[in-house]
Image (cartoon, rainbow, N blue to C red):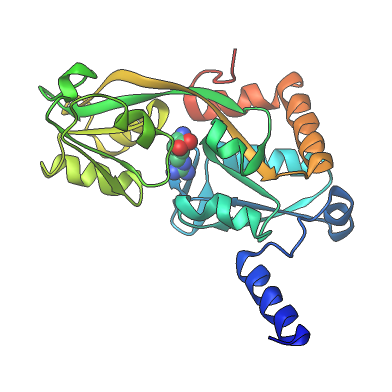
Length: 256
Ligand code: ARG
């Protein structure tokens, strides 16, 4: 292959990996006036749609952080399992979608300080399996791309772990009896059961993990990470965070 052709094909490979684009620096973001934040939009009450309106605790927090940095926000919503990939293709500056900080993900992205802590719980119809040991021989559903998949795979005796595009589809499958149990972050399950009037018919059980849930920026984007952490720290000190957490959860869910 001649040199020009080699360089061209190398460039194409890099483009398809997104590896040639650089993450926007804090200075570039400030110059543009707009912070680009991506989320999922199907994880209530953290990030979800009410009609055409993106809403939720993480949406309020993202807007408040941007405001304190004098930036506007451009929100993008897309399926959960592609969010960190898109971040590394520099399609947006930040991801705010309740990611648990895990060693695996830390290889790929730089996490912010956690903006809340939560448990992942087992959920089942009344009378169904609500503990790890009760999951033996059962079919469990969880969202694709989540940190609960390896946690479930490490529990001995589960018949199968099925993945779904989002928690709404899992709740439907659970109700229809296609699944014995569901796992998701406790505050999400509590909110969805209340919204759908299913509390009592569907019950929240034992926790399978405790998470520190955080936003992420591209690896090496240190100035942006530090600026976002500082802004969040300010919101946690001046009462803004407490007010938003009360609004969405009736309690303060920051990490101890
Ligand atoms: N906390 C879990 C994880 O880190 C689930 C997060 C799901 N987020 C969402 N927007 N659906 O994998």
